[in-house]
Length: 442
Ligand SMILES: [Zn+2]
Image (spheres, helix red, strand yellow):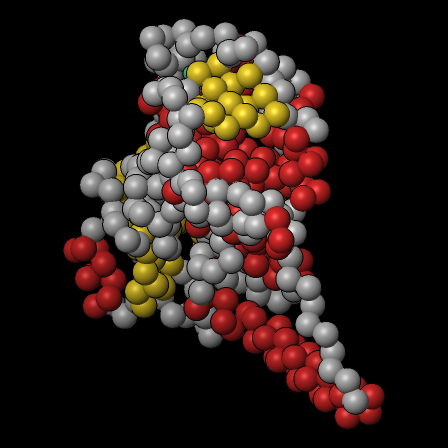
């Protein structure tokens, strides 16, 4: 984020100094006391829960609430992946995974109750409200269902069931899915206990009726929006990997709704100021008209470039991310706007604003400019609106950022380009390419 380099120098220096002091302090303590500082405890993640053998106590707590009944062939038998002698029980992979997804259901707490429940975890909903106290894992049926008997869900066990072969919350097979899909299946079937059957063939008529498919969509949405991202993350790689996949899965499950909620896209309109040599963009037609009429001062005109965004998150695909909009100031500057769909970058600039006096150059948060597809790093792309590695969906329009390299003059400005021609033009004009930053739609 080259734009903030000149603004952050003093902050960076402070960080380096504190790091030096910690190293020095540790060295003194070790030298004087002869012992080393213990490393801080690493917080548990979903990967830790999924990858290990459940303890005897954890399984007893589940057994006390929900009876697990394994019936018919277990394709993962006879190999045991956990052992009583190791503090667990003798478990096949199927049995371990079923316990582990229910432990995950306990540990994933949402900051909002699930829409069909008063509870803030899938486990508490199952335990207190679902009417289900038995899960039958069945190698002798070909499809999963509820409710036989009335208090039980029946889950089909096949060699290609995630809880038979997977070891992970999300498999890296490109197609997506993993033990999170198995927990979604539990949610789906258990929701049938209270919501009865599907209302549009094997699909649901609306999300709002909160049927079995609506519950799956909200389950994924809640994993994205209201779960602790520090827990629900892979131990390695992009910390947004699981989060981004969950939101894609919510969007993909929209196909199970016969009358999905409407989406209304808008045009992000680009302006150029020939005096300042600055670019600006807005999705608000009222703001654009006001600028046409001189509200932002002289020199502004439309470039003719527009790309698609969404003004209202409730009228957008699930997978959009907010674009934070910042403005400097007329004095001390920069007299310019900056936009980012990267949540970390947005949070960083807000924090910098809070610690920088208004008399110094800083970016001031103005609100959400619009919503748009995010850039993924390392998450498989399965649906329309995300872009990045390893693949682009064919309907996505990548938005690249160029920077005028004028931080030293307190005159930073950026242009967000959607065509190769514009990108070449900006490079030739000496603007620095800062890469892919947003994903619009074709
Ligand atoms: Zn169903």
